[in-house]
Image (cartoon, rainbow, N blue to C red; front, side, top):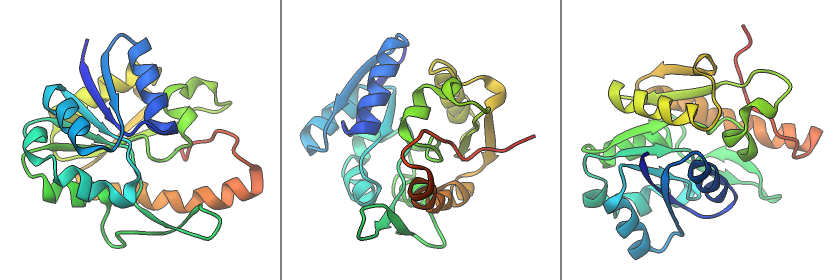
Length: 198
């Protein structure tokens, strides 16, 4: 059993918290209130950032001490939204939210994952008609292995998980968010993942 703090209790955070609890982990889900987030992060083994990406850097930098030595799983995408509320551009072109977090939190092990799919797929990958892919980006191999193992408790088969390498590779997966509004406009909110076909 792993102690996990999920920061953000919207659709993404709530879905992850419910599924992780069902998988047997000890989970605390909190909203964006700084005090609640600090308390949850302080006592957790793993912290999941499921807050809106545009404000994640500021929120998490404020938790530097609480996140020291912890694994921070970043599932958010930092985007500028269009008039319809869907992602229109990247907030950190030429970089990524994950890289910004790792630079701001050098004593925290940032691992980017689960940000290339609609949120229901994060916790129910086998419900898709084709095999999905979850990507891992991060500097610390042990942290990535821990996150890999965590994903398997959510139903991800080990051969569905691809380690892309260091945190810089998060640029690629975060840029994939730009597919999302076009897919949604053409097909609706049907669950999907951006995957590698082999």
